Length: 579
Ligand code: DON
Image (cartoon, rainbow, N blue to C red; front, side, top):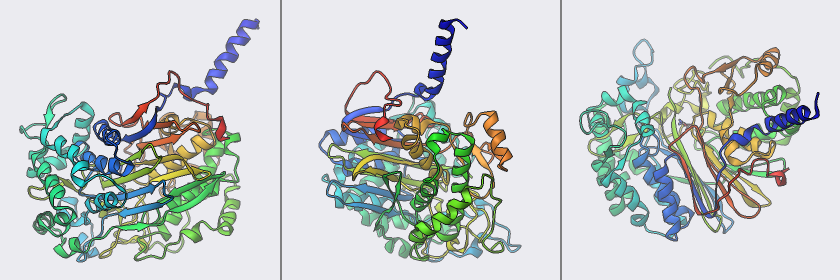
């Protein structure tokens, strides 16, 4: 072969090896970064940072703004987890997960023949007491420097003056088309002119603006002891629900210690039960002895080790974790060296381990994650949700905001699949005053005590596997944060016994190698989703530049930096310092 041909061929190979270089580069900035699933909310956060607010001021502003501009997911009618890393050395998780009402009973969900009633007959029964308002306000008073009025001002303006909808906003609206049409007061808000709005039209939410102003002026109490609680309780009583004023009055948020683990010399920090950071850690710890970097990105063996670790860890999640007020926190045991060593020996067998049971058998996705870093490198990483798109698709009276259906995260019966096909034990069966186990897990990675990455995702159980894969993509495969979150994903959750894969995740020969190991692979998660797990993430380079990445899967998302650094080329594979 002529020399030029060899040169050309090897050049092609070199580019093939750098395939992820086709990803867009992250947004780079020196003095702050806000990444969220809506560009308007990211801009709100960046403007708070520019006004001199810190990461918490910006995070609370983004939390309220997302409730206005991204109402499928951003919310004041849901709940979530906020991971805080502060320059003072404090590292905490705020648990503002929803709680089941005190009058909830399993029997309410079933008819006389013990069949689950259709959602239309369950109305408010899946609505948990929302935690977002108390969560955001509590976090602001502990870490913020601005007043509630200052950080809520942009959200109020967006609700009152409206914002121009684009086609992605409208695409989201239509994800719950039938459910919205079924509720006259919801339909009136979403279709103010009696038809779906069109791209380019301004959408105004006067009722939501009024509610936000009440929260601004009267604080948390108006939501939990005042007229907002009263409106929700009254609407719940009209529509099969059992929420009471007492449930609101007794609602609490909790500051919890994060769960921590080491992965290849990096410290991973994540959200403890009732979230699932323990499981992110378990998968990573199980993987540690296996040389995935050498085996290669999405190679058959790499995938086997990951899938087998995911399968084990999801079994453990579904059986051992739950609300710590009801279930002893099993994180230390699940992550103990002795136990992990035993499980790692099982992973060495290069075959899919058939689904096992501890004892005889006893959807739609929506959530949103956002991260903020300020110039002092304080980080706030929040995942919050109403669960499905627009949650229960219920708005109480004139309150103007969507209520969650997060009680669908419970098992109604042990060992029966829930909304996300998670088959869970009695630990996560619905009970009065209990919090449903969540997959949300906002996470951080530290190197020598400094923040290297902050990341989180939407996507129910796929949040856990998306986070693990993004961490591996950076730490093992040297990708930048944008490529790490945009790359094709796969997901395994013990049951169903399937590796779900996004398009182009594997080559045909890799698929056949995995099939020979006994794995079943399938596109279309839960037969419905081609892609999943929108991430919002950032990474701090050794020179202090912050790289922000909003997942390509969500075109309305944006990373907005403060004092941006213009780079013409992606820093793909420039992260050699990580190895
Ligand atoms: O807490 C959980 O695990 C679920 N309620 C999260 C739902 C979710 O992520 C849906 N989103 N895309």
